[in-house]
Image 1 (cartoon, protein in one colour):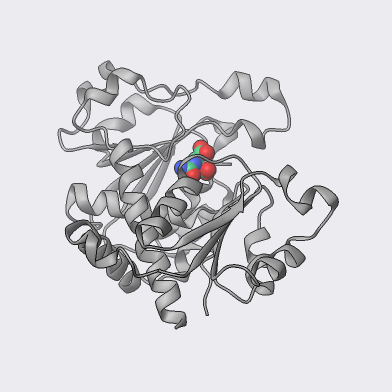
Image 2: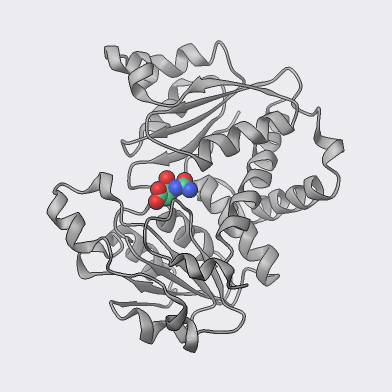
Length: 304
Ligand code: NCD
């Protein structure tokens, strides 16, 4: 039995295998339609979500399984003061696998230590979001054909944006990858992420100048400023529109650039970009569902 708390809980070989499974699910969906028959997924979401929770649910249904869960802490016994440890001991009696999102960093790790079924971190505070990274890696693989030799540009809230932290960890394991990190001074990546890059001698640049950085980038990963993690609303208001991608800004960008965003979008990408063939953020949503199907299969079939 095994949980996924960080993207590095999966080796690059396993990531490759998950992507191969996702390809096969797309090619032969009928082969998978009953694979999780009589299995239950519990989605324990203590924070808002549209894509991640519904993508997990759709993934489980498409595998023939069933879903139970809650979508806000207020409707669970957390509102009465129950600990995460006790909640997951309980849910382990009902479900075969748990997907958990929590505002506190480390909560899914505590869940994994106390559950008797696999736990998948579906976003913990400003820390990690490994299954979004599965969607991101698969999008890059499908759209570019490979994961190595890329200049990955991450832009926006690099401090609180958990998807960025997991993506950097994941991409730094492929050869020849470098990072261009674009953010306001106050929203730079946390020092542990920078340390991770330094330890592995992976080239990166940090800048506030989006337009000058754009022409070198192969993958542009835009993010929302994470309002819910700010201590004060004035800072959020001042920083929220630091970077807004518009069609004019793409003039100097590569023809084969791909533009990604974990979504939800607030104002970071002008809707006019949606018509640009380089925009991949809605494809990313669909790819995410296939990767979650592949992950559920891996964890539950491994367990068996
Ligand atoms: C992201 C998250 O929850 O971290 N959303 C998602 O799961 N696709 C990004 C965000 O909320 O900005």
